[in-house]
Length: 422
Image (cartoon, rainbow, N blue to C red):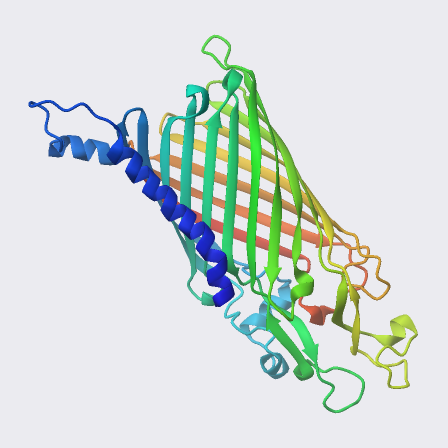
């Protein structure tokens, strides 16, 4: 808990500090007052300011609230057999804690977020934006998975209508699933049974920061509706687990680019590519291996025939990750628009450890499609209805299923959201 608080505090203080700056900037902006102009605006003016942003000396303050509901039919990214085990674990799985705090393979979650925007003149007299945000995901059944995310975005308009953006995001605590942490051969038969395994929570802290620059290439006008922009960026990602799962830590640089196209007054197409090189600690970790597959006495008991033998061996979870995606948006009418998306992501693991059958030679391929229908109900209120379908395949030739690693899976998500701009 102390580690979580130490992670939350710096960004939380930053958000509070930024919010304070917003209030101070609005409150202390010089305004000329006369005998006929009261310092407190009339009620009608207050209502208007609260909805469309307070404005003083070129600065504008606004806020956004979002409330959404989502159904997820595969919360923990499990194969069909393991989904059934979560719903009805065996006695050995209960003793080992394999599915502890994993109450259901599917769930309904509620997402709440609030953001603040301060927009005004920045460098070189051009517009700048400061936007802190906090969001919370609440899981109805799998409460251990509920989490808070803090974010901060800084934007600055640049020369030739370019835009520079700095962003940071922190999730102090996130529970993906449980992983194998230890095993005790209680009957000394050389094989680890389900009730002799020990699983630990895979909870981790996650943060990333980055910057990107957007440069317009062609301006869209009424006479010439085609427009194009290029966006390039990079950053750094970090994921940190507590002991005994420190071998699952990941960190490293990220990079990406987008081409943003206006194909007409009502149609836009974005094409994107992302890359990440994530390193993990190379260290001894526990695996359960079948000795006949290796022809070796892996647990040192004098035989080479044990199944699920307890082996402490070098493991390296480092990987290279790439993704290609496209998003098509078009307006059906002024208040209604549709967004369609597709992304293919592939991960290649770089382990060369001889007994690391989980990661050596491993490649994951995921395809994800999405669709969203968005309605503008009033000037400030919007509704979003959509869904995501994902499927992942692995080429892993050897996989000790006891480790708790991600398998082939399919996942369907349906969502409904409301957002309101204050």
